[in-house]
Every structure is written in C-alpha cells, then in structure tokens.
Amino acid sequence: MEKHQIGDVGLFTCGLLVVVNLVIGTDNGARVVDQVTVPYPPPTVECTGNGCESTIVSSNWSYIPLVANRFPPPATNSYYIWTTQDFWGLGCDIGTKLGNLSGDQDGFVFLDFGNPNQDSQARLGTILYNQSPISTDDIASAVVVFSQGFYYCSQIIGATDSLKIAVGTNSSGGTVTDVIAFQHGEAWSNLVIEINDRFLDYQGLTSRVVAVGGINVEPNFNPVYVPQHWMEGYNSVTDTRRQVVYVIGSADECPLDFPPSILGTYTPGDCFKKYNGGVLVYKWTQEDIRNISWGFAMAWPFPEIYNSATADQWYRISLLSRFNHNSPMYFRGVITQLGACEQLREQNPGVQICVGTDYAPNNGFLALYGRIQSDQYTVAGNHLKWSTDIRNYYGP
Image (cartoon, rainbow, N blue to C red; front, side):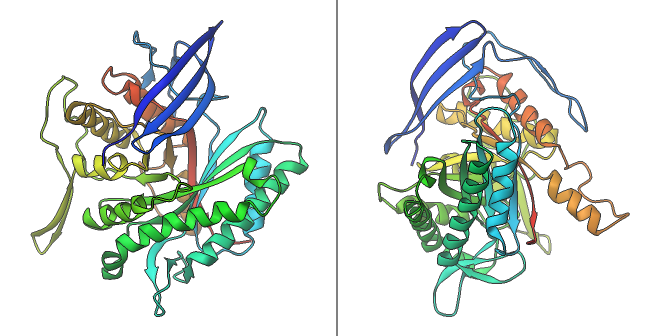
C-alpha cells in the first residue's frame, strides 16, 4: 500500500532561478512529471494578517519546493455543489479569472458533489448539498460542461491556461455510506476515467483540462474504516487511464506539538474521538489520517488549513510519517474556506461565524509552507503547488 518515491530531479541554476525537472513515481511506475521555475534559495516571506504568525526562512538543505509562476500561487475558487445549473458559466468564470492573470496558469479546482449515495435502483452517485440525488453519469455530464465553459472563456481572451479538476465527494453520511464505501470508491475512479474519455470528443480540451479524483475526509464524519474502504475501492481499479485522488482533509483534534522534531520512532497521538453518552464510539489517530491521505498508491494530501493550528497539526503528521515510515507526506496544495465563511456571514448578519477558522488563501498556504519548510525532516514534502478557497455554488 505504500508508495510515493521521488526521483530524477535535475537542477539547472540560472541566476536566482532554478528549473526543476521532477518525476514523481509510485509503485505503479512514474506517473506525474512537473517542470517548474522556482526561486532559489526558497524565499523568505513575512506572513501577515489574521492569526498568521510564521516567517518562512530559507534553510541550508538543498530541497527546492514545487512552486510556480508566483509565490504564493494565486488562489482559485473551489465549490460545494448545491446545483449543476449553468455549470458552463461556472467553468467560464474560472477560465476568465485565470486568463486575466499574467503568464500561463496551472489551476486547481475541487468540485464537491456531496455525500456518497445509492438510489432505489442501485445506481451510485451523491447527494448534492441541496439534498437532491445525482448519478455518476449526470456528474460526468456536468463536469464536461464545466470544462467546456473553462476552455471557451479562456480561449476567447487568448489565454492558454490549464486546469486540474478534482471531481469530489466526501466520506460523510450514515449506514448507506458504510455499506457502499468500497464500490463507491471503485465507481468514482471509473467516473474520472469516463470524464477524461468524454473530453476526447472536444478538440483541444484534453491539452488544457484533466479530471482527477477528489474526496473530502474529516474525522468527525465517520469512523476511519469508511474512507479506508472507499480508498481501497478507488485504488482497486487497474485501468491504465486511472487518475490520482486528492484527499481534501482535516486533522480534527490532532496534537499541535507531537511528535517532537527529534529522530526516533513514536506512538501516534490521538486525534478526534466520538462519544455517545460518555462511551467512546470511535477515534482517529495521527497514523489514521496519514494512512488515508498518503498511504494509498493513488492518494495525495491536500490539507484544509483554516488557521495556524491546522498547519501545526499537518506538519506534525508529516513528521510522524517521516519518523515511522521514512517518508514525510508530500503535500500538493492547500484549501481554505474564507469564501464559504463570507457567504454564511452575508446570510446570517450579526452572527459570529467561522471565528478563528477563516484564513485568507495566502495565509493558509504560507502557514503550511512555513511549518514544513522549517524542519529538515519534513522539508522534502514541500511540493505545495496550488492554493484554492472553497465556497458554495448555488447556481446562477
């Protein structure tokens, strides 16, 4: 089940910039290749703003983080999906915003279609946030329309930006989720394959857009075996067209200061605990969170960073991974929720909402970057490339 080796790293210095050719391999073979130009040494960045307290300092070791074009990268919008009405317009909005930035952009968006679901005819899909069921086939159609909107509106302003779309569900729900977790994960992997196949029907689309898997996993949603079974199902698909899955995850109640940054082997600390009438129903540990988001061949961690504490939690989990598994976690991006918080405040004037959990995207990115960059045992995992901020999509 373990994976993620890094190899074939070529560094070519050119003044204050380095061009990095990076091949990321798994036990399925080399799969992801990036070429980026990055500052070297890594920049010192003052992190200012609401609750932000870290300063990023270049270190003596030679690892170069995976950042491109701008630092921090410009944030895209991601969405909790309440409706698929005017998905073309939603994609167009993303294409226009990226296209109006200078330089070629490589954007990321997470489309969260809600809880896993199986309808009365045994068809798999999800329950949207408006509580309406939607099949995987209809999700595929919506993502294709979204992609067409992105491509068209990017083209008409002369941009050649690319977009990675994480087609998402989550690990929440009741007994139905428990029963169908494995087959839903398997179906989701095939859904992503189907979406990319449909892209082939539209000239030029595959050169600019790719669909990947996405799942929002939070310990307070369900016991660890539910997302574990889903991930097993997703990884069970052996089709060579399969894609990675980005785990949009939280580290609820995980330690902020364990393990210490001293080489050794450590018993994982406890995280979220679910009680019913004073009786422990289930709990998560740092190891559980590490395994779900990094222990599977196709999984890449994409943490929710809502404040400085959440950055500390993920840094410590990466540290544990380095000590106990000889590999830190390789983070690909950061997701914040400022947009969703602002929407809720508009809907509930005068109510205190998201207090202390509303980092702006730049602050979220810099907070995690700073934690993992500052430690020789975690710095190799500093593959942060994307920043995205989630909000609700209610339709036109």
